[in-house]
Length: 152
Image (cartoon, rainbow, N blue to C red; front, side, top):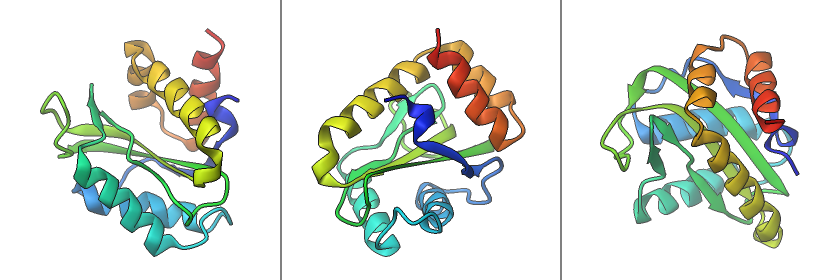
Protein backbone atom coordinates (compact mmCIF):
# COMPACT_ATOMS: atom_id res chain seq x y z
CA UNK A 1 0.00 0.00 0.00
CA UNK A 2 1.35 3.40 -0.97
CA UNK A 3 1.09 6.55 1.13
CA UNK A 4 -0.54 8.28 -1.85
CA UNK A 5 -3.50 5.89 -1.59
CA UNK A 6 -4.38 7.26 1.85
CA UNK A 7 -3.79 10.99 1.52
CA UNK A 8 -6.37 12.96 -0.40
CA UNK A 9 -6.34 16.51 -1.79
CA UNK A 10 -9.28 17.46 0.43
CA UNK A 11 -7.17 16.51 3.48
CA UNK A 12 -4.31 18.90 2.70
CA UNK A 13 -3.89 22.37 4.20
CA UNK A 14 -1.38 24.45 2.27
CA UNK A 15 -0.97 27.23 4.84
CA UNK A 16 -1.81 26.29 8.41
CA UNK A 17 -3.35 29.12 10.41
CA UNK A 18 -2.27 27.61 13.72
CA UNK A 19 1.03 28.68 15.19
CA UNK A 20 1.39 25.96 17.82
CA UNK A 21 1.54 22.17 17.92
CA UNK A 22 -1.86 21.49 19.51
CA UNK A 23 -3.59 24.00 17.24
CA UNK A 24 -2.04 22.55 14.09
CA UNK A 25 -3.06 19.01 15.07
CA UNK A 26 -6.63 20.21 15.73
CA UNK A 27 -6.71 22.15 12.46
CA UNK A 28 -5.68 19.13 10.39
CA UNK A 29 -8.03 16.85 12.38
CA UNK A 30 -10.91 19.24 11.64
CA UNK A 31 -10.10 18.93 7.93
CA UNK A 32 -10.11 15.12 8.22
CA UNK A 33 -13.32 14.95 10.23
CA UNK A 34 -15.57 15.66 7.26
CA UNK A 35 -14.33 12.66 5.32
CA UNK A 36 -16.23 9.88 7.11
CA UNK A 37 -13.22 8.05 8.58
CA UNK A 38 -13.15 9.91 11.88
CA UNK A 39 -15.84 8.45 14.12
CA UNK A 40 -15.14 10.77 17.06
CA UNK A 41 -13.07 13.88 16.31
CA UNK A 42 -12.59 14.93 19.94
CA UNK A 43 -11.35 11.45 20.94
CA UNK A 44 -9.06 11.33 17.91
CA UNK A 45 -7.49 14.68 18.83
CA UNK A 46 -7.20 13.64 22.50
CA UNK A 47 -5.49 10.36 21.54
CA UNK A 48 -3.04 12.11 19.20
CA UNK A 49 -2.19 14.70 21.86
CA UNK A 50 -1.73 11.95 24.47
CA UNK A 51 0.67 10.17 22.10
CA UNK A 52 2.47 13.47 21.56
CA UNK A 53 2.82 13.89 25.35
CA UNK A 54 4.79 10.61 25.47
CA UNK A 55 7.36 12.05 23.09
CA UNK A 56 7.40 14.53 20.25
CA UNK A 57 6.66 13.23 16.79
CA UNK A 58 8.79 16.06 15.41
CA UNK A 59 11.27 13.75 13.71
CA UNK A 60 13.67 16.46 12.59
CA UNK A 61 14.35 18.12 9.26
CA UNK A 62 11.30 20.38 9.80
CA UNK A 63 8.89 17.41 9.77
CA UNK A 64 6.38 16.01 12.26
CA UNK A 65 4.19 12.91 12.03
CA UNK A 66 1.71 13.12 14.90
CA UNK A 67 -0.22 9.87 15.01
CA UNK A 68 -2.39 7.59 17.12
CA UNK A 69 -3.91 4.16 17.06
CA UNK A 70 -7.46 4.83 18.19
CA UNK A 71 -10.96 3.48 18.02
CA UNK A 72 -12.01 6.98 16.97
CA UNK A 73 -10.87 6.20 13.39
CA UNK A 74 -12.12 3.74 10.76
CA UNK A 75 -9.27 2.25 8.75
CA UNK A 76 -6.32 4.57 8.13
CA UNK A 77 -6.50 8.34 7.66
CA UNK A 78 -3.76 10.83 6.78
CA UNK A 79 -3.90 14.60 6.65
CA UNK A 80 -1.20 17.06 5.60
CA UNK A 81 -0.49 20.58 6.75
CA UNK A 82 2.23 23.02 5.75
CA UNK A 83 3.39 25.99 7.79
CA UNK A 84 5.53 28.60 6.09
CA UNK A 85 6.63 30.20 9.38
CA UNK A 86 7.20 26.89 11.15
CA UNK A 87 5.68 25.52 14.34
CA UNK A 88 7.46 24.66 17.58
CA UNK A 89 7.01 20.89 17.96
CA UNK A 90 9.87 20.07 20.35
CA UNK A 91 11.42 18.23 17.41
CA UNK A 92 14.42 15.98 17.91
CA UNK A 93 16.72 18.47 16.19
CA UNK A 94 15.26 21.51 18.01
CA UNK A 95 14.07 23.10 14.76
CA UNK A 96 10.56 24.29 13.94
CA UNK A 97 8.30 22.09 11.83
CA UNK A 98 7.00 23.12 8.40
CA UNK A 99 5.55 19.81 7.19
CA UNK A 100 3.02 17.88 9.28
CA UNK A 101 1.48 14.54 8.39
CA UNK A 102 -1.31 13.64 10.84
CA UNK A 103 -2.12 9.92 10.90
CA UNK A 104 -4.75 7.87 12.65
CA UNK A 105 -5.73 4.27 12.48
CA UNK A 106 -8.08 1.76 13.94
CA UNK A 107 -6.03 -0.53 16.24
CA UNK A 108 -7.22 -3.51 14.16
CA UNK A 109 -5.22 -2.10 11.22
CA UNK A 110 -1.87 -2.12 13.07
CA UNK A 111 0.18 -3.90 10.38
CA UNK A 112 -1.07 -1.63 7.59
CA UNK A 113 -0.54 1.42 9.79
CA UNK A 114 3.06 0.44 10.56
CA UNK A 115 3.81 -0.15 6.86
CA UNK A 116 2.37 3.23 5.84
CA UNK A 117 4.18 4.99 8.69
CA UNK A 118 7.45 3.31 7.65
CA UNK A 119 6.93 4.22 3.98
CA UNK A 120 6.11 7.83 4.87
CA UNK A 121 9.16 8.03 7.14
CA UNK A 122 11.35 6.68 4.35
CA UNK A 123 10.02 9.30 1.93
CA UNK A 124 10.63 12.04 4.49
CA UNK A 125 14.26 11.04 4.94
CA UNK A 126 14.80 12.17 1.35
CA UNK A 127 15.90 15.82 1.36
CA UNK A 128 14.70 16.32 -2.24
CA UNK A 129 11.23 15.09 -1.26
CA UNK A 130 11.02 17.47 1.70
CA UNK A 131 12.24 20.40 -0.39
CA UNK A 132 9.70 19.59 -3.11
CA UNK A 133 6.86 19.59 -0.55
CA UNK A 134 7.99 22.96 0.77
CA UNK A 135 7.68 24.38 -2.75
CA UNK A 136 4.25 23.02 -3.72
CA UNK A 137 1.28 25.39 -3.69
CA UNK A 138 -1.76 23.15 -4.13
CA UNK A 139 -3.10 19.91 -2.65
CA UNK A 140 -2.88 18.34 -6.12
CA UNK A 141 0.85 19.09 -6.16
CA UNK A 142 1.24 17.45 -2.74
CA UNK A 143 -0.28 14.21 -4.05
CA UNK A 144 1.66 14.43 -7.32
CA UNK A 145 4.93 14.91 -5.41
CA UNK A 146 4.24 11.95 -3.12
CA UNK A 147 3.44 9.72 -6.11
CA UNK A 148 6.55 10.87 -7.98
CA UNK A 149 8.87 10.05 -5.08
CA UNK A 150 7.12 6.75 -4.30
CA UNK A 151 8.12 5.54 -7.78
CA UNK A 152 11.83 6.12 -7.12
